[in-house]
Image 1 (spheres, rainbow, N blue to C red):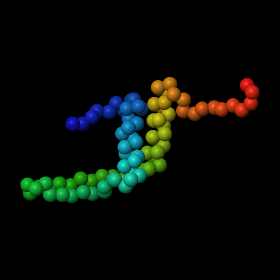
Image 2: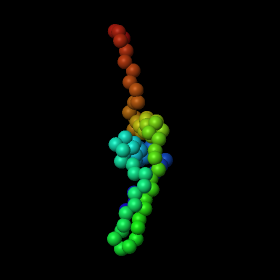
Image 3: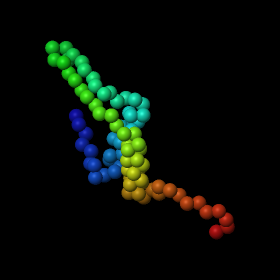
Image 4: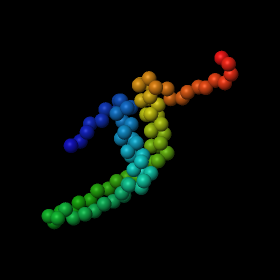
Length: 83
C-alpha cells in the first residue's frame, strides 16, 4: 500500500526527507539490484544517487517551515544583563 504525501505541507514531507537523508548517510542506497523472481523472470531495480548537501539543506528548510507552522521558534535569543 502506498502512502500519499501532501507535498504542500512541510510537516508531512519532513519524515520522508529525513528517511532519504539518513539512508544516504548510512550507505543504504543501491545503484543496481538484479534478482531471479523464481518463476523464470529476472527482476531489475535501479536507484539514482542523491546529493547529501541538497538533502541536508532541504531538511533544514522543512524543519524551519514546520516549526513556524506549529508556533515553535527556530532560534532563541538570549540577553545578558539586568533587563
